[in-house]
Amino acid sequence: MSIRVVITGLGIISSIGIGKDEFWMNSLAGKSGGKKLDYPWMNGNVFYTHIGAPVTNFNPIDFSILDKEISIIDKVSAFALAAAYMALLDAGLRPMLYDAKKSFNRIEGIDPERLAVVVGSGIGGLTTTEISHGQWKMNASRKGVKRYSLPMLIPNAPAAQVAMKYQAKAECKAISTACAAGTMAIGDAYKLIKAGEADYALAGGAEAALSDNDGYGLMGFDLLSTMSTRNDDPEHASRPFDKNRDGFVLSEGASILVLERLENALARGTGIYAEIIGYETNCDAYSMMMLEPNASQIIRLMKNLIGRNGVSIDDIDYINAHGTSTVLNDKIETLAIKEVFGKKAHDLIVTSTKSMTGHAIAASGAIEAASTALTIKHGKIPPTINYETPDPECDLNYLPNRAADKEVRVALSNSYGFGGHNASLLIKKFE
Image (tube, rainbow, N blue to C red):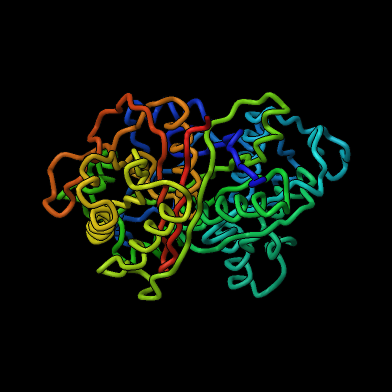
């Protein structure tokens, strides 16, 4: 009998809310996370972009992360740990402290060797890198360099920290495929459970490249001219598919999902948000920054995802698009959807969560997968905000500025990352 994989827990840290409930309320209200940045390193003479969508009011202690842990983990790992903690509680899985010295927990009722962890991070511990390397360059000595700087900065740290905290001893791995990493992490976790290699998984993405120590994350994207410079209007700067879009708004955060075998969820009597019924990935092999202009691999990706998993284009009601608010990406993604769905494309609702949250790099796909699961569960689709002026090359139904009540039976959640990494999840209403 084929193994079915369901989503039973959501943990979300985003610029529009910490926790599933706050995030969802603000998503439906069309709240923007865009803000004028006021970090000490912000300098108008250096940065063209002065805006971002940071996470605010985050305190790791609120999520069972101890003071002694905070000092030896980067913020990106703190985000991942906090999101995992919320996801476990949301799924009705109870962490039980069994080693106070190491702050290790076991999940009541779960064999640790059947619990997997897959977490994506595009950049890893950037703040730790900046602090420790800066001290090393300035002093040419060990003074000021964090003792654990190497294990704090490496991109697998968020996955490893989650696995250690919750004693997950099945496969644990990190995905580092830029903006597609969160979606790929969920897809890989889905495949592990489908293959019988695990019964449960904590999967998603985390990124902390905005509220870092000296602004190197923002500078990197600033140099590439990929971000909006609508500096006088940060709340309206992220405007996917709008004719006057001028780039994305950099964000941060994390989203971790609990995936599990359907029979386990039913036996536990826990709530089910949705079922994952397919995952596909491929590569443009075209550019480190640009989508392939003819969208051939994105088209192949969506066609394979639909064709191989027992559904047709007529079954798809909704697409949570990558929708970055960059001029070319939005046009190319629209082109791909129209090629795959034909006349049906104009009957779909296609929205961009990034219009509200900004672009959280590796966390973005995982946040969007969580949003898609909530959409399916509640029959409500959050809007694409800041859509004011139609673009003739982006002419689908982007649900501008207002949420909609709509039953969604099957949805796609799409992500595309620097380097041509393409990934998509097929998520279905549980029946």
